Length: 139
Image (cartoon, rainbow, N blue to C red; front, side, top):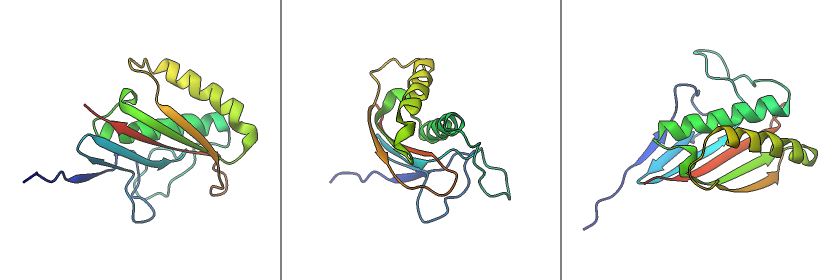
């Protein structure tokens, strides 16, 4: 008989409780899935989530920081990430997002090949320009 691996919800201290019945991240065994994160500033008790600012640069960097916080909560790093999905609201933002993304990951000091990535175009709540999720495999 095989032992069942428990699924654990991940909510970093920087995050508020999700607005619906989902987890910011879940880990089961060596698999960690980060839910779509947006450019909200770290949580302040009793206050609603606040976007970091109106620019794609501000939102992309904060979104990546929020994804990283969930990864770290589950014991992962960017080196463990296999897949990243980027959701943009405007096709005109693709080149700028790539520049920000490349500079961010250059600064992370990855020791493994970078994750695979897909970029899609979506609608997001007013003021939000980008959402990112990630899949990591540990060990």
